[in-house]
Image (cartoon, rainbow, N blue to C red):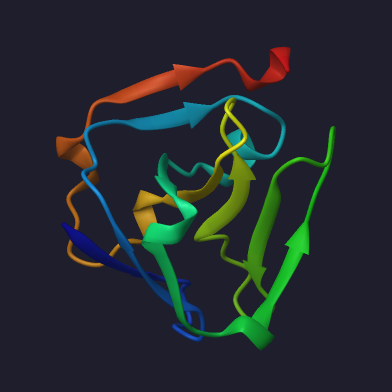
Length: 115
């Protein structure tokens, strides 16, 4: 299935393909403040439609995840990272997907504080 997502102001927009069978809620210092629910898709299934110039990047801790934020509205609708096998991934904040019911997706808790 293909989903369309964006930041709050709409300057950053993208599509991503895959099946959302679960999402993750992380308790690290950033995710717990942001309140996002994350789903991971292979990077090649992600297409940025607009807003590359409106994005800024934030990294912290081990600097392995590139948290991409809209410079205008401040919303992080996705991030770049790698899975344990070294594959490039897009971490999608499913709360930023259009016409998607987040209540229907099981949420797994992740202890990001331990990393």
